[in-house]
Length: 386
Ligand SMILES: [Zn+2]
Image (tube, rainbow, N blue to C red):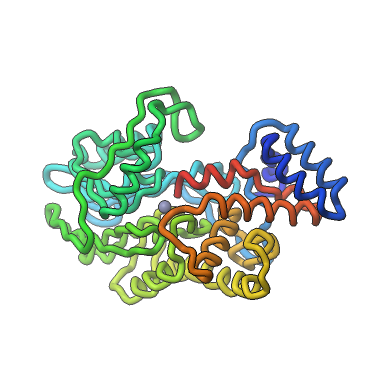
């Protein structure tokens, strides 16, 4: 993200401004911080606000297109476009395996616009409709589009189904206009998977062998990946984040690193990540390095008994500071802390991330880095996806 974009999009709700301001008053820079916070609050509704924490010594991520790309006979990846300065609503990549009678989808995206875009691209390329859909895990940007696959049997790990059922109980009844996700209001329903499997499962779709492999706990406790041995292709779901800061709100990071090491030993040439451009083992190893570098920096501060938010405000990650969505560092630090102090659960600890974000903002306000203050609503919006 550029400086310009960041200053344009820095906004705080009144509630957030009060919280940030209350903390800032404790610091020596209280006058500046309170005034700056008030100015930011006056700008109105919060917008996505990645902090301007890029490092000019390292390359910025590439840009990539939204496209259906054929990877092998009857095998396609559908990537969401992204890159520096490109507004990205956090929609996941997907995959298609075409059989003689029907298509199988790997993930359903986030809502009407991306789901219909994906479905029409797949139908245009193959002339077929979807008969199966696998959800790689329960996050909204992978399952919220399930309702747009009315003829597909939906499969997942049992944990993914259980979390979908929980989320369905509180899912709004209508899709409301949201940039990149929803054009016009329409009926909304979270359709949960109807078939579950715990371990590996193999489909033979036409001539294509598709091995579903359980990866969890890693990104979540219910991660499934699709491995196509004939073509050495892996659809990794959110076990893979390439050039995008990995999102760990429901993760077991050390076990996530283990599965990255395991995949390194597989016969794989092409990896389709849940987020970011198509890559391979090199890109997956880089994502693991993000967590390793973050882990070393976080551990020093954990041992020094800093709070997670204060630690996150201090940590620099070198080349990984340029990855998209850098504010995820806060939730990832929280998750490392929970793993080390024995409080980790499969669930997202919203209170801990919220508290850490407030602490992070207090440090930034105290250092007169108001342009790096992160609206709490931004962090809360992240809780719904990725
Ligand atoms: Zn996810």
